[in-house]
Structures are given as C-alpha cells and as structure tokens.
Image (cartoon, rainbow, N blue to C red):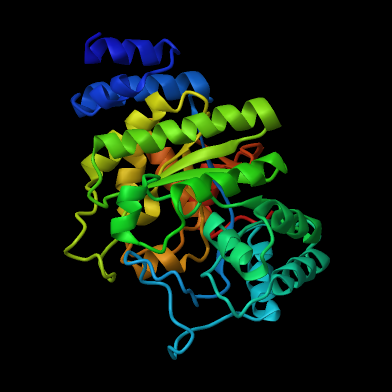
Length: 378
C-alpha cells in the first residue's frame, strides 16, 4: 500500500498500522493537511472551533526533578523559589470568576516539603470557597512524587484527592513517551511506564485526563509514532474498561530559549508542528478533539492548525508560567476577544466549551469585537 493509499484509508475511518503511520512522515504537507482536515470535519462540527475560559495556577516552583528543558523550576534554596498560600491561590480563582471562568489547571513542581495533607486541605479550601469551581490538577509527575513521599499507591492518593475535590488530572509530563528520548532530556523525569500507570489509575477512577505531546527533543518519526500509538492504545483501554478516556490531544513544541537544552536540542519548526499535528489526527482515530497550540508558536500557526486536524483553540490560560519561562511566544494569556477574533478570521464559528467539550455558549463575535471588551461576563 502506497502512502497516498494510507491517506485514503485514514479518511475512510480505518485504523492505521505502525508502518502506515511512519509512511505518513514522507508525504508532502498539503496532502497530509487535506486528509487530516477531512477527518476533523467528519469527527466534529465542521463550522465550529471551540475554546475554554480558564486559568493556569502554578502553586509552587520548587522541584527536585530538575528537567534540562524546564526554566520554571527552582531548588528550595534559590531566592525566587515560592509556594503560594491558599489565600493567594484563592485570589487568582476570584479573578477568574470575575471574567466568567470556572475552571483552573493547577500544577507545580515536585516539592518534597509539601505533604499530602497540604494538597488535600488546599482542595477542600477551594471547594468550600468556590463550590462550582472545577479543579484539574497535579500531573502524573506530581502524583509520582507523592507516591515516593507517602509510600501510598497512585490509586489511593488519587482517591483521597478526589474526595477532597479533585476533578481531573492534566496530561503534562508526557513529552515523548519513549524512555530513550526521556533519558537524554531529563534522566530523573517520570518514565513512560509510570506515566501510563498513573494516567490509567486516574481514568479508572473517572477523572478527566488530557493527552499531550511535546516535539523537538531530537526524536524522529519512529519515536513520534510510538508516542501516538501508545496514546491510542491507552484510549482504547480506557474506553473499553472504564467508559472513560482522554478528553483531547494537545501537541506542543519544545521551548529551549532559557533552558539547559539550548543548543543541545533542535526544537521544532512550525512546519514540523503542523505535519505532526496532521499525522496525529490521522493516527488517533479514537480521539474526537485536537487542540491548536497558540502559546508556543503564536496565533497565526494556531490558525493554520485549524486546517491541519485541530478543532479547538485551547484555553485563555489567564496565567501560564512554565511555557513563558522557557521562552514561549511571548504571550502568557489570551483574552476571549483575541481568541474569538482568531477563530473568526480563520473562517470558523467560535464556541465556548467546558473541559469535557460540552458547548456552553456561542459568543457574538461582532458585539464582542465592536465593543472591545476584554472578556465577557458569565
């Protein structure tokens, strides 16, 4: 079967094999884009591009993992190391509520000075003060850190966090789920098997999860294919066993500007990003939603991504310290007005969604843009 036949197979809804996915990397970008966009139109509303109002809260930058590609983390002794108070976190949530958001994505470093009770008390504090707040927090890396700190299994830790108010677990820490790649970039980083084990535990409990991928570590098509096929297999398992699974797939490019990997890892171009995104859409046949990434490559590439398989513009990210610290595109947040303009200019109808991709409302682009409002009220 030739590469063009593989495209026809994917557009026809058939599952691609490993060798077929690998063959896609040899195809020209326009052919990949056309096929990926066709699959996207089949799986989601053809005219609609969704977005989410939320806030990223990085509760601590103290971390013992020390990834070479991270410019965000600090050791406990560095003068700009911090751990936010519960009150400071609540103030950030209050600001989110003022602009109509009800969801936070909360992550930090692996901070050994914070016991499990600190996390449980934080969740209870936030849920008591904001009963309708949705909290997606603590990546697999942070859960692994709590396993090592407490001696408890991930299942037990996640159950206790859920009882305290946890709604979901971000899919961060995936990067490239091939240990040879991970070993070179960050030897102490969570290993592939542990990432899947902890994600599986979260899905078994019914927690929201997101699948992600970061390209630009020097990995090739074989490693990227292995990552995508691993996510696809986990999605199959979660759907069959737990009637659950990843809500979406998000692809990012490695930012190395202010990290120890500068000059050592190639990063990834916009061309590579769009190609890998299109291949992801063709490979991940059990995913409905793919996010465009504006924080790492900017709005124009994110607009193009809407024709390479993406159907979602991501979130407002009212605060994002990890990407910006590593030298992201220079924007740490986007207002609803900006996102709506980008979606309309790309030729789609914007729709505000919740984290589970349920549409909440269709903002009026004309009124929003004419009035120049920064953000619509809920």
